[in-house]
Structure formats: C-alpha cells, structure tokens
Image 1 (cartoon, rainbow, N blue to C red):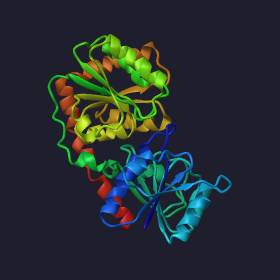
Image 2 (spheres, rainbow, N blue to C red):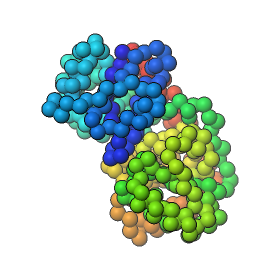
Image 3 (cartoon, rainbow, N blue to C red):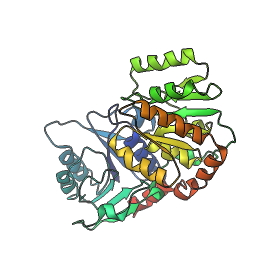
Length: 335
C-alpha cells in the first residue's frame, strides 16, 4: 500500500496532483493500493475524474503530518510519497517514524529527513543535497519526469518549416495575466499565425472576458477550454509559450519547441537551465510587464520562427525526455 500526500487547487495549481496521479495509475496497473491524503482546501474533482481514492485531512486542530501518521498506522501503510509545499522539517520527522518517506522536491528548501528524494528538474544535481545529516537515496534529473500515460501513446510532433499555430498557456492559473500580455504583444505583429490560448481551470471570469475581447478584434486568436487531451492537443502546435513547469516538460517530451517564462519562484531555475542548454529560450519574469519585457518577447519570438533554430533545439529533447519517468519512479517506490 502507498499513501500519497499532495494538494491542488486554484492557488497552487494542479501540477502536484497531476504528476502524482500519473505515478498512482502506474502502480494501480500492477495491483498496488494507492490512497491520496489531501488537505481540506484541495480540489478533488481531478482525483474523482481519474478514479483515485482519497482521504481528506479535515481536523484543523491537528497538524497534517500527525493526521497522516495516524492514518498510516491505522491502515498499516509503511510507505508515503510526499509532493506538497505544505511541509516542514518537523513534519518529515513525524512521517519518518512510520516508514519509508519518498519526497518529490523542486524547492531545495531545507535538509529533508526522508528515505528518498526525487527531483526531476533539469538543473537538479547532487550539490543541492550535499552535507546532509541523513542517509538518503537521490534520483535526480529529467529521467524521473512523471509524464502522463496519455503522452506515451501519441506520436511525437514533427518540426515543420513554417510556424502557423502557436499555443500560449500558463497552466491552471494566471494571476499576473501573462497569457494576455504575451498574446497582446504578438498578435498585432503576426496576423498570419494562429494564436491559441488555453484557458486555465481557475481563470477568473473577468480575465476570460478580457481575452475574449482580444479574440473579437483579431481573427487569428482562438480560446481553448480547459480539459483537453494534452498529448494530442500539444502536437498540433509549432511553438508553445509556457511557464517553466510541467507544461514545458510535456511539450518537450512530444518534440514541440517552446519558449519559457516565469511568474512564481520555482519556475526560475528550470527556465535558466533550459536556456543555458540551448533547449528553450527564456523570456523572463512575467510578474512585472514593461516595455523591456515586451521587446524581449518580440525579439525571441522572431528568432524562434527560424526553422533551423527550432530543428537544432529539438535534437536535444529526446536525450532529456524519454517518457519512462513514471516507470522509473514506480520501480523506486516498489523497491
């Protein structure tokens, strides 16, 4: 039996849930029992849609880690996969009393008292975890990116000579209106390109209306509702603009060229690393949109329209993303 401690909602997004669901499904296929242990503020719709069994931690007077520990003891569960930022050094100490703790990390926040650390970010290295007090196994790098099953069943994208379809996505949230600012910058300059915006699950209605106004003015703008089969959806595009998070890794796994940006702190290192490896150019931080950032968007976008540039970048994608990350993680959990 495996417990998974993860959260997802309109504030923190759904990335934690989605990658853990991928891992859970791989284990369930092999007849392993998996239970999600979620906070009282988590959105459970995506869990229900995927047939995932979950237990909600509802006692506000007891720390989450104590509730999780008690649940694990009651259910004789001795392994837990943790993928949440709602955790402290003291929480790790509590969970480690029960058994094997596997942590999916991308913050390097403190010295984790756990059995296993999985960090699938491209920039992850053993230096981040040196001088630890704890004896842990480290599984680092994009070999452990938990790509969803739907992506493994779809043929990779072929790099086309001309860019005719571009996707702009921010994931499930967009508090800084990054999609709107990027779209407004590019759509006037490139009326021969179709720009698609994926409307995030938690986009506010007022924000959607602002995007629809742009669509009304420009015939080459399409707004796409949340809930697409992303594997099939992504391969329609010649270029994807998105945050340095799961969506970029998914696109690269499908051989789709990208341009990255950030609007939360844990995007930054991935964006920089992909840029330094000449895989994905980095626009910068979308929190403050000014004329300098607008000029950079126009410059980098123009450069990425060049066929040879995109084709050369794509030669590195397969080395970093081979679609086997979920199976590797499942083997670690079973081991």
